[in-house]
Length: 269
Image (cartoon, rainbow, N blue to C red):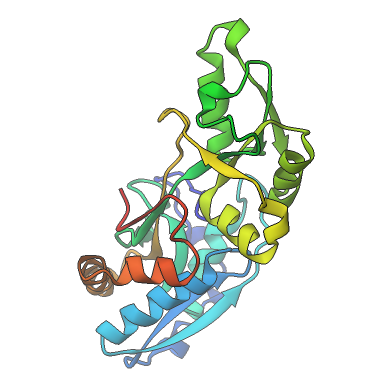
């Protein structure tokens, strides 16, 4: 969900029916509420981070799961986020954070982790992207940041040294295509590959990461989305995250939740 970002000058308040806003229900100063989208593969790790944040703020934590049925352009997402942050929670977890990415009604926490896309292959002779012969097929997730980065990178190469992109709609099909030989390499988001490896080890057996050019790397700094008016709470959340980075808690939680083997940087980049 964190890849969606609205125009920085968009105003949401006029698009939301005030009858749908129920802020009076959220007057409990002893709790901090977190929302998560049910499609996020890192939810268990994000929840563990949130519980530790709450503990360091001496608050109880509560969680609300949100559904997600948004298209590639994320239409309607920001208005739903605005409602959720007023009615249901203080922080929406698992978002790509960065300056100017969201409407002015929002602010973002500092990142607690950064993930990269990774290139994987089945052929043991492939140790880097440059080992993959030209005109080979490289699978990507359709319209993902890594897909667009790879397209730009391929376009900079001489025509005789270009690979063919083969976009997929589902990550499991991307991995299966690699195992079946439909594609020679695949560009996949690190947490997605880790999750598939844990849930279906047979699907990823024999696959290994290979080096890619930095122009293809697509790093996502992950943090939380909050209302801009919650500036004091955001500062407190940021302080908690900073202490968790400094004492190694984020790194330990990454290991505990199966993300220790993928490109993941506590505190972001």
